[in-house]
Length: 152
Image (cartoon, rainbow, N blue to C red; front, side, top):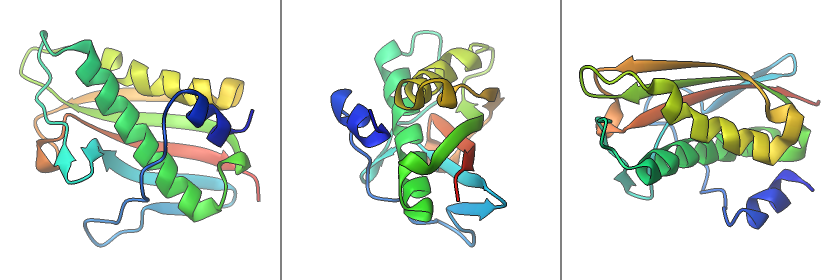
């Protein structure tokens, strides 16, 4: 199944490609590698906000990670024309806005990692970093960056 078909089977759709909120581009493709700028968990005009706490519902973490990954893939698709050109997801970096003492950053990113693997199979398996931060734009709970190998 193609990535778009897998999205549909999962009951997901790509949002409209996000516009930059500053002086940068959403995606840079250089020598077959796409670098996707950080995407905060925005849903339309609202944001899934942090900080993450020990009692933050799992559903909220899943929604934040899914939203970030879908936004990143939307930007990627706009840049390369078709998600079928994804050769390999190389790297996922996540920034988790969490309260002091929270240490389960990887748990938050697991939801995004699973989605990439669900969409791309073994091509979606990637290296990853999960970092805790004191704040993110619009108090977003999560921001993710992707590095993707693409077919020319």
